[in-house]
Image 1 (cartoon, rainbow, N blue to C red):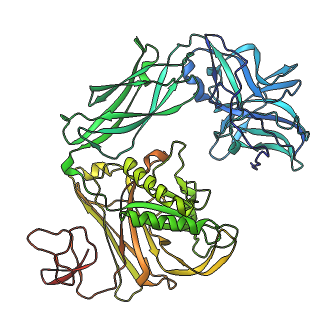
Image 2: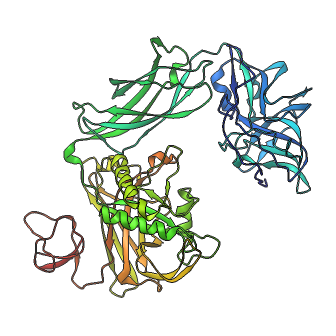
Image 3: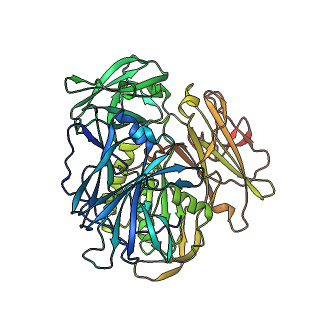
Length: 600
């Protein structure tokens, strides 16, 4: 289906609901709110007669039991006069959808701004549509060019599959067109029956850490729905470890009847829990003093976690800042200057500059860099993702357009942010990078050895590796529109060695892993300016679970005959640097051990 984007910008405030539902009724649909946006949308560039639809999956009706569909309601920013409501079954196939003729049409004589309620002539039973994947629910309206009437439709800002469809003539062609990136149409079924006041569902749980420290608080995120007819206030949830209750949480803010939402809680792992793998369960049990009694089979959600003691923690090697920039971005030099100040203040911060195009062809923008930008949903430069920690809205990137006099203030804020949100570290990551003897490829080894539970903690994690280059001379525009043709670009990602979703860790045992890569040397790269950055992340579709667990950065060493790899260092065999001094345990480079040159 061809995609169009509505020309009106969405502005989300709310209008009080004017179609009040009865105590035994609740709405069902993909428009997840009882409130209405403050502004409407429309497509005045394509006037004509249209039917707009939203698809309501049949799964939405499972929680209402034997309740019947008795009505429909839809929100408008402007009256549209008379209309016709349509209900049509849909069957989804692998790459297509079969949309059937109208099952029901209901003429509506008049409409108003706000909620409009339409009763069905005969109640419907959702189970009667077992063969359908979804029900298309829509209404007709005339799209005009007149500013006063051009934006009557209401949508939310949540993109849902087939959440907003147009049927009519666009670009002179009749068809059904998908506008779903704009949001979901404000339209819902109204169901009536023996629906409980409170019906809480817990359907997802996320740890903000890959391991939970014993006798310390860890944040968890639980996704809660309320399929009842009343707003839930004062929900109590029991926290259990291996079936034993260890804590009760109270959700202070209200849980509405439509909005699925992630709620954040702090969980304390008791000191009597032994290190190792355990099962964490969160179960909704009561609203205030009233126990939950309806549909209890889905009130709990569980996840396995690894409990660790202080002795199993490792020091984080680096904090990763992925810097999104372009040679044609006027504020990007300012962003680079700020990150230089951040690195000067915190040596554990390491920068990778990932270039995208901004109107012209950036010489350092590649398909691999664009894939990273798309994966992280970056849409503005200059920006920076810090350890891939997601904000409340699921986005990653800070805007770096700070004035120089603000640098000190924001450097302090960034450092505090890193401290507050970086997780407990149990994953060591050590990298070695060396040119081959012929100088035609880079040999990269990334390894780690730590806790006995390392494999358990990292079972859903991947390794990511970048090759970066410094001291690249090329053009760069500034905020006055002038190009500096001899601008020095540092930390530039030249090669993403692993897939955009990372590469599986290759475990040697329950406590160690080692991955090897051979990267062909590009003729445009200068080996003396090359470095390798390696970092570990979790594999998940949820942006709040992708944080960088640990990262490291090492220079690419020239091939030296006789150098051997060292898996571990022991206290009995000291390691010396090339000047004869004892090397620090965390240092990287070329060293002497047992009379031989080694690299680590």
